[in-house]
Length: 399
View 1 (tube, rainbow, N blue to C red):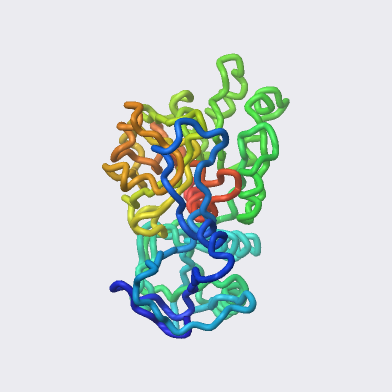
View 2 (tube, rainbow, N blue to C red):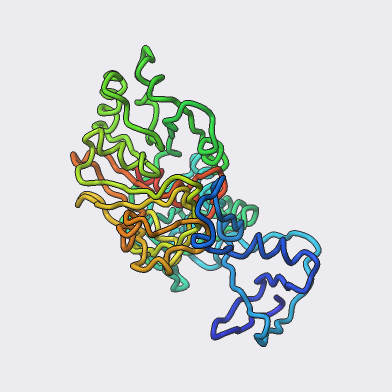
């Protein structure tokens, strides 16, 4: 769009994209950008999950459907090639600059700057930019000396991200390095690739490898990413090494029911439990409410309501007092299921209504920070919309 345009009471800024549907590729456009359909009542079993793909909703596009009969005539130019978005350092005098971690690109930018040795702080509360905008908890704050400003301006232009002038300074914690992440799986998988794509340098290991290794490698890491089970009773060495890791302050990021059960089985938290609607291809793009708002170190940069892919649909049935709820389901399935296959007439699914889906906090002992997602934000390397929350969780856990 060449100019800002108001439709249905909302003004969309200059530079917004318009995909007209009177074109030969309208079916492809609709599949890519539309959220899809809820087919839960149309089939009884699905061969292969997921039941819903929408790259717009998985990759972070904010999509608005314009009905065919609506009056809609913005001034627009046809796109002939890809172009950079604007980015850099917000103009004006500043005491510090802040980067909002609201996209995979922002995580990659923070990791690149940390690798270069730039000093940064992690905001522990929302702050206000010099221009009056609210920046969420988890924003990265950099110094405003001339050399740092030049580097921020350069990488901001290259990566299409803005470094905002800081108006109010919140409480902060130092970022001493990029978190070192161990993926607790047995093979190179999509989770490892996704973390690499974010600019981290993860390693992978199974609990069996952890148990049989002659030396404990966990002290070489800051955070464990996990989607698997806690080591079995026979794996006493692995269990002890994990207990030592968390007692020494090592962080934890878990996903899915296994990610939650890992903490409970290890005695690291008490009262955390999860349920899932698995089997027969149950998978859905769901809506969740950002209960933590801008004060959350995990969802602070997310909108008031956002989407996620769940394969299978999973939620927390109880949350201990040591953990805070960041994201939650609504109280009505019509406000939860965006598309896909999630039959809800099983009795179990009723417990999903109003339940938490993203939580963070500390272990019962208070020695380690943990974030647990009911969904897998790195699922099959596709839901990039959710990746920034993983980056925030890694930096939070490493503090």
